[in-house]
Length: 274
Image 1 (cartoon, helix red, strand yellow):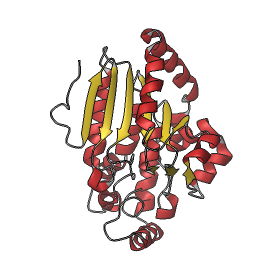
Image 2 (cartoon, one colour):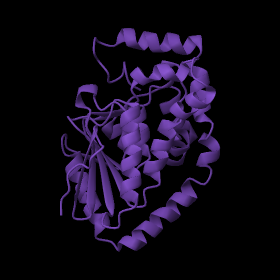
Image 3 (cartoon, one colour):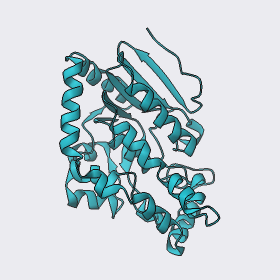
């Protein structure tokens, strides 16, 4: 039985059929940038799906041939808004951390299907999924430091788990961009597909997982995650305080303004998002 999008989701599409859910980021005009509203919806849908016994695999993808341009910098003004209380700023800057943790904790198998690009917060979200599939002409990058803010959302521990410390530093500190074949060789991606074929391949991978006994799959995922992430919270729980501190600095403001000047008018992929 297939379902349409539930009431309350303005920036997402949700389809469920044959024990597989497909969640589509649906802000194509903003290149699926992760606004505060979209992040809250993604947290809500993760929690909704986690409670469902009729869903055993979840695919996360983006509308309009790109996954996500990252966190929406239109929301970034609040990170350094001195008129807000510390508690308010901590709540706002912790949204991305809660988002990625909610997706990491979904008990079903999760697969990110990436076309075009997954930049900044978009890649951070994909890294919270179990596996990543990308079109062969896609690319990934983490430009946060070039914009004067630290990489947060619990992403650094996930990168270290996947890649080891040296490669994690290349992505984080040097802000290197990797095309899909490079990202596959590096270990950031698990599969590549012909351009436009990421979702189809993600469905094939999901079908292989769905052919296994579902309860045992969930138990095994929980065991692997427990071993892999046991220290993640200790390494990342202060990240939202770091971003609020850094975003308020003059060097951070200057870096963001320089990035906006470099971007084309109306562009969001790397100028107005991260």
